[in-house]
View 1 (tube, rainbow, N blue to C red):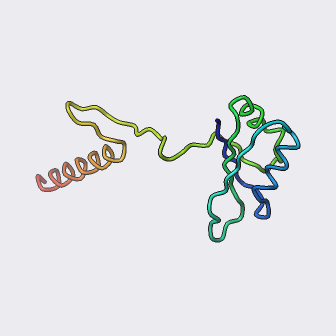
View 2: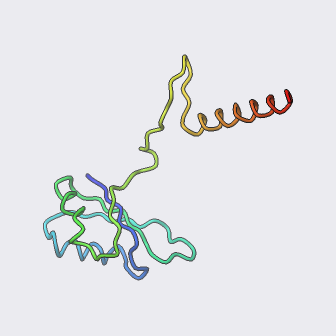
View 3: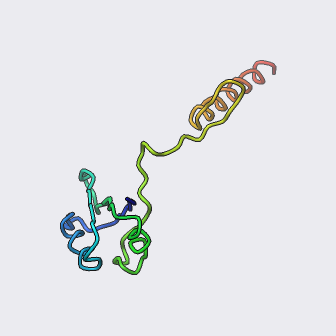
Length: 116
């Protein structure tokens, strides 16, 4: 299965509407659509579309969607790889690296200030 994110969808569009739309274009294909919880004060909606790998390329074509729709590969948060830096026996993710760099900068700034 491949997963697609579509965003900037009108608020009145339901999962069933998208299924009907896609079944009209691809009648023999299985389509699974999920909608995240509605955000407060949302001006648009987003959906996750899951389809067979063979259909993915067709659904990523802009010409099958209304011009306002945003189409991207769907990324699951749990699948995002943490960028790591190896340093001896330790590994730090990007956030830890930035915090360490900031801490070192503050320490050096304080030391320079005290030396003057």
